[in-house]
Amino acid sequence: MKLPPLAALRAFEAVARLGKVNLAAIELHVTHSAVSHQIRSLEEYLDIALVARSGRSLVLTDEGRVYAYQIRQALGEIAGVTDKLVAKNKHPQLTLSVLPSYAMHWLLPRLHDFISAQPGLRLKLESSMEFASFEQGLIDCAIRFGHGQWPDMHCETLMTDSLLVVAARTFNHGVLPTTPQAILEQPLLHASESWPTWLGAAGVEGQRPHAALEFTDSTLLLEAVRLGHGVALTRRSIAHSLIQRGELVKLTDIEPVHASRYYLVWPMGTKRSAQLIALHTWLNEQVATYQDSL
Image (cartoon, rainbow, N blue to C red; front, side, top):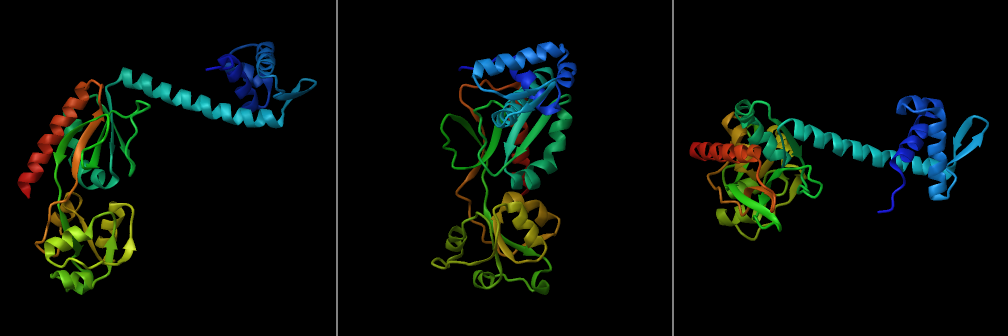
C-alpha cells in the first residue's frame, strides 16, 4: 500500500481539528516549525494544497477539509483497534457475539455464575441480529441459531429448541384461547418463527396467519405479548423464564421441535483460548441443567 508518512498525517489532522499550528505542536509535543514542515511534506507527497496560508494563519482548502475528516476517521479506527488489542493482551478477555433475544432471556439470567468462576476475565457481549464477522479478529466466538453449516467455522451444538404459542395471563380479560382455531382468531404477533411448522403439528395445515404486528426482534415481540397486544409463536428458550414467572402462559401443549439449533462457533484455524474452553464447558453445563428442568 502506498501510504503518506504517519507523522505528517497526525500533524495535519491535529491542525485541522485544533485550528492552529501552535496548539497542534503542544498536543504532539513537537515544535511549531516541525508541524509546519510535516504539513508541507504531506502536500508535496500528495501534490495537493491542503491549507491556504495567510501570514501565520492556516485555513483548510476544500480538498483539505474533506481529507482531514477522512484521516480523522481512519486514525480513530487505528486507535480503537490498537486499544482493544493492548487491553486483550494485558487482561484475559473474551468477546462473544449473541442474538439479543437469547442474550436477554437465556444467557444473562445465568451469566453471574460464569463471571464469578472466572475472576479477572473481561467478558464482552456483542449483541446483534447479524452474523458476527470474525475477519477483523475482534470477536472470539459467537452463539448462532441455525443449521450449523457455516463455512470456515467450528460449530459445536449447544441446544435444541421448540416452538410454542404464548399470551399474557390477562390477555382477552383472562379468557385465553386453547385450540389452534381459536388462537388463529386472535391478534397475532409475528417475528421470525415459522407458523407452518406449528400449524402442521397442530393438524391445521394450509392456513396462512396474518400478523396484527410484526417485529424483527423477538425481545420486542415478547414484550408486546407481555403487554397484552396479542398472541405469538416463539421459541421455548426465550419464553421459558417468562412462563416460569407467570408473565406469559403457554396456550396449548402443541410444541414441535424447531428446525434450527443453537451453536457455539469460532473460526477454523484458531486455537481455543482457556477462556473459550471455560465458556464452552460452562454453557454445556447450563444447557444440561435447563433441559433437565423442562
